[in-house]
Length: 278
Image 1 (cartoon, one colour):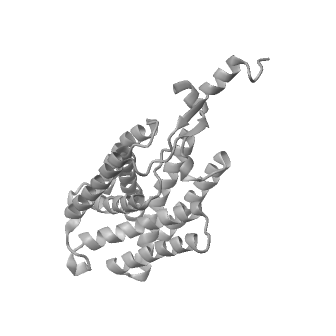
Image 2 (cartoon, rainbow, N blue to C red):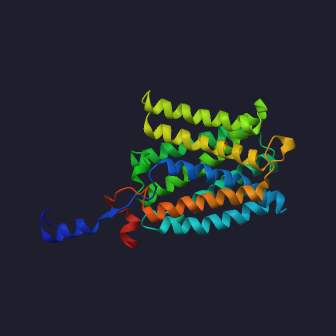
Image 3 (cartoon, rainbow, N blue to C red):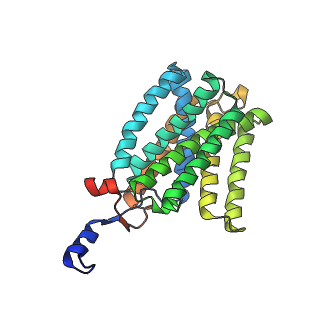
């Protein structure tokens, strides 16, 4: 048997440890700003493609799913956090998550209350399995492929859940677009207060806020894009999408140039599949 301090044993251990950067950025002000902007783009872009360009929900879903998968492969295979790739993935997954709910509601006639419950259960189940394997749900430790897979699955369900829950609230309470923006922004503010004052756990607070930013962004997108007769500002989906995309690009370029939002690299054992490919 080889002794632990034997040179061969030490070399083997060193080969199976790698210093890796967290694949998810720090949840700074820029993070939340881009997240809300991406969510708004997800709402308006889905409407633009399916309605304004007359592609229909199903064809739009297929096209966006293919584009998302192509970008997701690049994100998943990268060894570090790359702002442009990460946030493009977020924008695309927000569109896909929106379209999943739209297909269920408009195409299959699934009630919003059912979609909300199903996606809520799916998200909780994802967290349970994630924690069962990794013993953590922290976004500060997305340093292995398995953790990243769980992370993106959770993100997908947050967008689908946020879409269904947001539409359900708007439908049941008959809120206007601007009032809806205030309601969901207020809910996020309450989560922030619960975290800072009442010591709500950081992980729980993060994921609740992550879900709530979806209906907030959707309400903001609707308020800007919908006709004035319906309570919006009448900018249209094209103008709204371009404005928010420009804002996202500006913020992502800033993050890329300054390097803000990155987390320090960590020493972590390689996954079994990464031992083969690394």
